[in-house]
Image 1 (cartoon, helix red, strand yellow):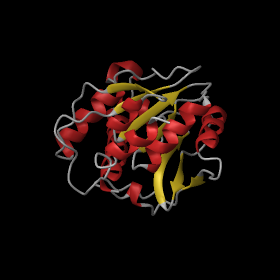
Image 2 (cartoon, helix red, strand yellow; image 1 turned 120 degrees about the horizontal axis):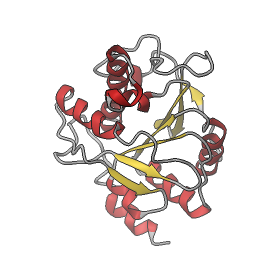
Image 3 (cartoon, one colour; image 1 turned 180 degrees about the vertical axis):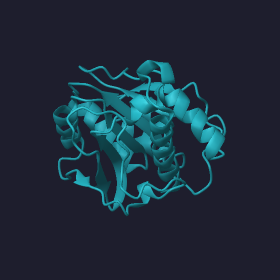
Image 4 (spheres, helix red, strand yellow; image 1 turned 90 degrees about the horizontal axis):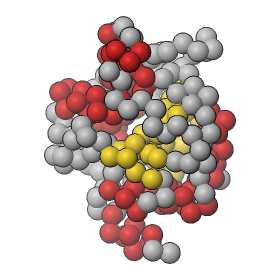
Amino acid sequence: MRLIPLLTLVLPLLAFSPAPPPAGMKLALLKYNAGDWYANPTALANLSKFCNQNLGTSLDPDYATVDVGSAELFNYPFLHMTGHGNVVFSDSEAENLRLYLMAGGFLHIDDNYGMDTYARLAMKKVFPESEFIELPFEHEVYKQKYAFRNGLPKIHEHDKKSPQGFGLFWEGRLVCFYSFECDLGDGWEDQDVHNDPEEKRRQALQMGANLVQFAFRQ
C-alpha cells in the first residue's frame, strides 16, 4: 500500500507538543459517503477564530475539507466530523483513517442529531478491537483552558437527554472524542443560523477550544 511510506513522512507532522500549532495551520472537516458531512458550514471558521483570540493560536479560518480516504488527511492534525444520518466508510477509507489516528491524528465526531448508530458502526470498522467509553468529568479534555466540571455543555435540546462525551483510545491515547446529545457544532455556527443565546455559543466555543488545545498537547 502507498499509505505506508506516506505515514512515515507525516509522522513528524503529527508529533504534537505543548507548543501552539504552526501559524497558518487549518482545522479540517471530514468528508464521507452517504450523509450530510457538510452540515454547519460556518462552524470551523468560527472555532478557528475563537482559538486564535483565546488560545493564542494562528489557525487559518479558511478550514480544509478532506476526504476520509485521501492522503491529504495526514496534513491536518485535527479533524471534525458531523452530520445527521448515515455514515459509510469503505474498507480502504477505514484503513486510511485508522493509520491517521494511529500516527497521532485526532478526530472529533459531533452528532448533529441522528448519526449516532451510523457513526458508531463506521468507527467500529476503523477500530474493530475498541469500544467507545464515556469519559469521566475528570478527564483532561474537560480541563484545558476552560473547566467543564460537569462534562459537555448542552447546546441544543432534542430528546431531553444529558450530553455525553465518549472516547476511543489507541494504546492509551485518546484518538477520537465523540460528543453526543450536545450539538457543539451548532453552537460554533454564526449566531443568526440557530439564534442560540450568546452564553450557549460561548460554552460551545470554549469546549471546542478545549478539544483543539487537547489535540495539540497530546
